[in-house]
Amino acid sequence: MRDHKKLRAFELADQLAIAVYKTTQSFPNNELFGLTSQLRRATVSIASNIVEGCARFSETEYIHFLDIAYGSAREVEYQIGLAHRLGFLPDDSYKELNQLSTETAKVLNGLIRSLRKK
Image (cartoon, rainbow, N blue to C red; front, side, top):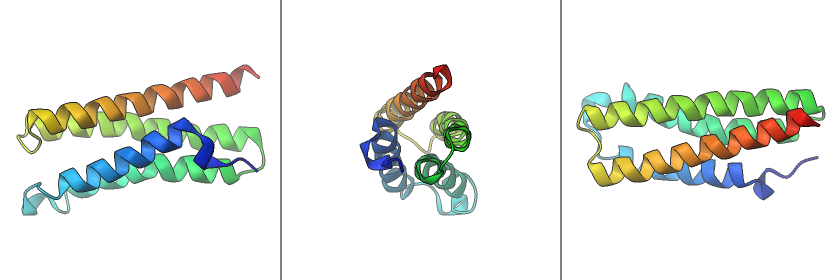
């Protein structure tokens, strides 16, 4: 069985989830069931799908869950940009989250590509 804790992609996804939870605490209350909830769910989905994929026995299933995680990572990139454009994220928070989400997506993409080459 694979150990998700040894993957750089998981480390980044976990850091991103924590950062998003902390940052979205300052979002407007009327966004609690809107963008706040969607952004948090999508961010947690990245790490969760990496963990679930690592628990699967076949390489095909593993890659499938990494693909889902990658899709969620790209979703989070969009949502972070949207939150910034709506004025919910100041520039410094946006830059930090955007950099972390982009790095997470890049590392996941590299992992997926390397596994598909095998």
